[in-house]
Amino acid sequence: METKSDAYQTLNLPENASREEIDEAYTALLERFSEANYLGSPLWDMAAEKRRRIREAYTLLCPGAEPPPETHAASAPISAPPLPESSVSVRIRNLLNANDPDGAEALLKAQPELETDPELIYLRGMVAWKRGWLDEAAKYVKQANRMEPKNAEYKAALDKILFAPPSLDRLKKSKKTGGKWACGACGACAGECVCEAVCEVLCDSLCGGC
Image 1: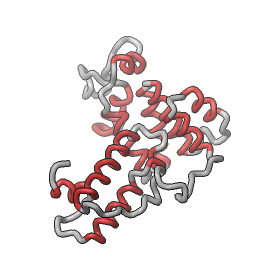
Image 2: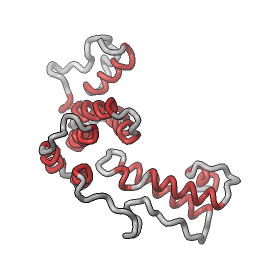
Image 3: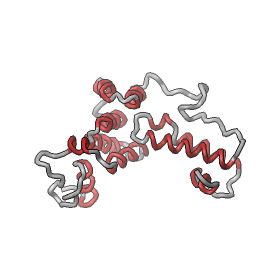
Image 4: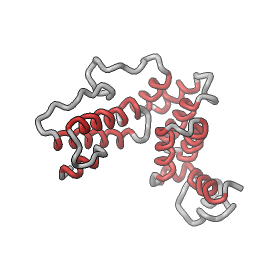
């Protein structure tokens, strides 16, 4: 971060913001991008970078000042409320963060609500994402979005999955039999180096499906 103007922009504040407003923005933004909110998410690195920039902005605008306690961040002191260890969702997210999609999948398959719970369906997509299976990841995260359309994490994850540059390995895993990338319905994706999941979204957005 280079200037105070950049710091105000990071905190979403006008340049005449008071110290109280800076403190409030700092606390709210760290809560929004806390580690607990991004466990198992493909946006984990993005959230970590956001937290770094928020802290840096505060230091620049309030040099020498003690920042408000980070009571909502997972990295906060022990007095912060912990996540429930018994939560299946938390255990699965922890396995994904530890780069153990096999363990996460085994725990998922043991859940009776696997086909009906949006959180478990979303995490099923995250398992596929960890393995580089873009089509399967998009399928499940898209399903979770339909079930909970107001969930910002699901929406952000779907956007990242659909528009992340696919690696060669991911392309191979998502390639249709016969080697055709276009769906054949409208030709909007013909000739593009995209996977089936992206093709499906293009068709949904352009013609509503066929």
